[in-house]
Amino acid sequence: MATAYATDAVRVRDCTPADLDVVHALHVDAVLHSTAIWQEVPHPREWFDTWLADRQGDGWPVLVAEVDGVVAGYATYSQWRPHQGYRLTVEHSVYVVESFRGQGVASTLMRALVTRATTEGRHVMVAGICSTNTGSIALHERLGFTTVAVVPEVGRKFGRWLDLTLMRLPLD
Image (tube, rainbow, N blue to C red; front, side, top):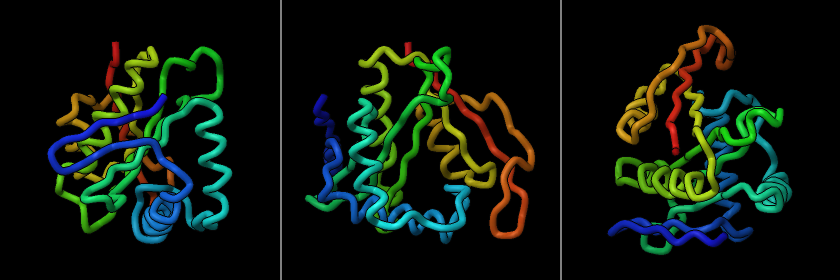
């Protein structure tokens, strides 16, 4: 299913292989410099070729946002947990290039992602956010997500324990 979703400044579309250099750069930045991804070694660029093909082949969306023709971020979701009982619950990720942050890119990507999930008949979208990432938590609250749990010290990165804030958005 092709996606075309836009606001005044941001256009959202399905990711193509040509976008993967930006997706990879966002991944590397998040792994090396933030607690957005609780991974310590970034995936190599080539890993994303298979990742995109697998996601799209399994029917999971990978969306990119463009501002003036430049890829400014991406968002995706997939099944929250692997068991069949969770098939209608999805967990998402959203990442924005630093120079485009604060310009509505993440909000636009998230609205497009929620629209896609709703259209597909998903029931709930889940966000797992490092509890110190107050900007992301605030974004999700503005979009209607509510905090359902804070799980203390379930991750470790940069020599410290990290708490996980779980948020949810009902879709139907």
